[in-house]
Length: 174
Image (cartoon, rainbow, N blue to C red):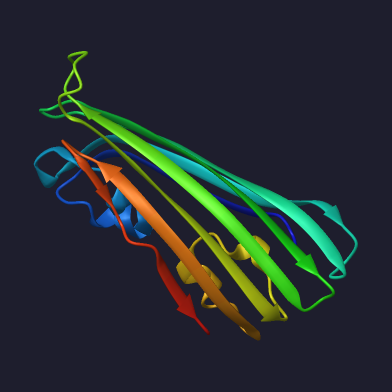
C-alpha cells in the first residue's frame, strides 16, 4: 500500500453545516455547532503509511488522525480528536486493519464539566483478495474495496450527561 493522506480545513461562517459535512462527512458525528450554525475554524488531518513492506507478501503499516475545532457561539465551543490505526497484508490475499478514534467537545468557557461530551469508536476489518487495507479509513471504506471480500466488527461509546455504549456490530461479506 502507498501513503494515504487526507486534510480538511474550514474557516469562516456558514448558515448550516453542509459545507463542513462535504469536507469531512464524519465531522457531523462529533461536532455540535452552536444553534446549528458553523462560525469558527475546523482542521483535521490523517495519514496511513507502511512501516515495513515486502510487497504484498508482508506489509505492516500505521495510521494517525488528529483534528481540532473552535466555534464562536454562544456558547463558545472547543473540541478535538485523535486516532490511530494499524494494518497489514500477508501472502497477497489476507488483509486486516484495526482503528480507534476518540473525540471531546466542551461548550462554554467555564472550567466545570457542564457542556462536556466525549466519545470514541473502535473497529477492525479483515479481507481476502486484492485488498488495500491502507485505504480503509472507516468501516464503510473497507466495504468498498474492489476485488476484496471484507468483514468488519466495531463498537462505540459516548458521554453526554451520562454514558451510552453501543452494542458491538458485525457485518460481512462486502
